[in-house]
Image (cartoon, rainbow over all chains, first blue to last red; front, top):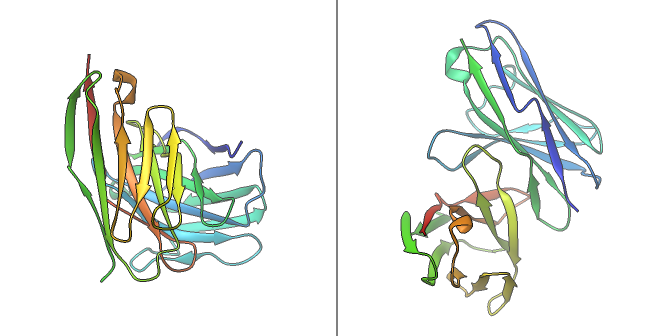
Amino acid sequence: GAVVSQHPSWVICKSGTSVKIECRSLDFQATTMFWYRQFPKQSLMLMATSNEGSKATYEQGVEKDKFLINHASLTLSTLTVTSAHPEDSSFYICSARRLAYEQYFGPGTRLTVT
Amino acid sequence: EDQVTQSPEALRLQEGESSSLNCSYTVSGLRGLFWYRQDPGKGPEFLFTLYSAGEEKEKERLKATLTKKESFLHITAPKPEDSATYLCAVNIISEKLTFGTGTRLTIIP
């Protein structure tokens, strides 16, 4: 149990375009999901906390207008990178909270902006 | 300031050579400590949750322990497939996790 999926697993887009990444909890309901960013050989950096039916809470320094988060149902959260630029290229990972404070992670999405 | 420190940064072991990874924390009000395994290019895989000092959890060749200041991930008779980065995280406030920088473990056949 506690499976989280992400789609797509990798995406290449041109500078200036927008990209949407989906995160789904497949076998449990998640009122809270999280979005992380990870740079090579570094640990995970929390970008935002997404709560079902309400606005996301962004970490300091994360542009909310660039990284749009929507948590429309108990099993789906989406991250849209708007007007992407090469510096947005990264590994994006979502997680979903199940029991207490346990988070289960998706497989990640590799974004490359050319 | 709340901190989570993992050591060593990297560890190379021969197959079958047991060892321990350390996660030390200086936080107030620990609500949970978590261990994850991360393979290259993949998301972290949940291993253990520990809530109180003295607690121990086991899974196959892995055993996690917790004291008031640190947690250890013991690996017994490791195999090459145990090679990965092991991440420690703590929950302090709200539902956020604060991650350590990880230990990159390599098991040599």
